[in-house]
Image (cartoon, rainbow, N blue to C red; front, side):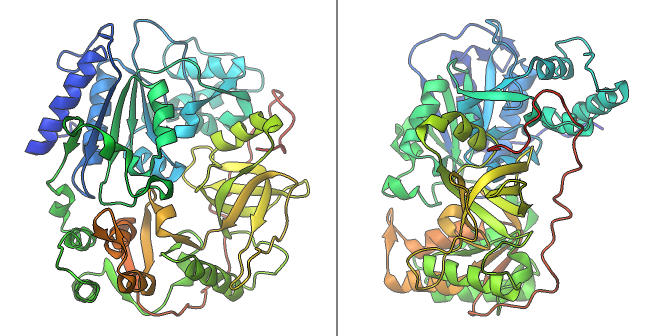
Length: 512
């Protein structure tokens, strides 16, 4: 079946042309699908900005397709062939696994920034399989791997360009082949960065060291990183390097959630008027719900979005209470948020391993159970291509009105976690869920305080980010109540099929 060609709006077409010109300087002619030596000169950085629904992701996907057709090699983090002078490379990045998974669901081979900053060192057996799958090597012969398993891997890769996915189809995990990690030394050619409103100055500088040609995609209506004083990195670029998309493409689907998001741009709209709009929308469309309570069943996989930490902590403890969670342990199925890695400098390799496996600050994780060693946890990293991880863990459960968190168990060092049944709207940026619950009393408190951020009422920025996290359904919770669960927490849908044993590395219960 031949898909119809994409029809661009005027602003998308103009942005595509500007990016095409930038790529020509990088040695890629999209008009004639030619690869040439880069023209050299100063590094190139450009940004494509626009609000939710303006077509940023569509443009990113079409640019990726055009580059792939021109022969550019896509570096996705699962495997990278040896650099060749006649090749150009592209990496499509997002700040978190969840944000990268949103792109992968649309057929764009995205990975996290960490996975490109730190590159894995693979066992030679992996390189043989990867080269063969990518079409640049002979069919491998590997002890313990049958022809049927290789055929399954090839069939999977033919329909989905994911080497970890192909290995999983053969009963293997890509992580089993990783012997170490190193900071990237050789630069790549082109980087696309989605959700770039989340970048801080340090990440931006790191990316410019790796990519002489960098294209940022971002939403100026979102919240800037906490340490950025309300400024996003693309707002510091020269005006001519920022391309703005204005037309709202997803409005064609008559999306009431986007209608509400864009209504916030009205400077005369107050909080009470906005809530009346939400209530009216809920009476016309089931995709918007005027909620009288927080639905606890949703909290295990889709956290309640709040503004205040005190609200977050109260909701987390209410969630644990209604599920009968013990004081001294976690239940399988409880959601967690990675809060960073606590390892001394001498364990830098282990830190890189954890981060590259997806345990970066802000990563959403589901607890599957205790590991075989004290302080270890079996975890499912949401959005990661290879999501099953066993890691030394320090889990902190914050308590209302108590300065020190309760720690049900802890390794001496490792990945640190907070509970994830509720998260702040700041931490939710870059993620999307099918259904999102927004705790409206918190936004009302922000409106009453009259706080501003970057010239706009803070409550409007908070509301915009929160409701645009919803892919299908928005629940605007107006009362401080919690429903009872309809059943216990479950993890059966997340448990991976046991992988085939390998002789590459017998250690399975380490820091990752």
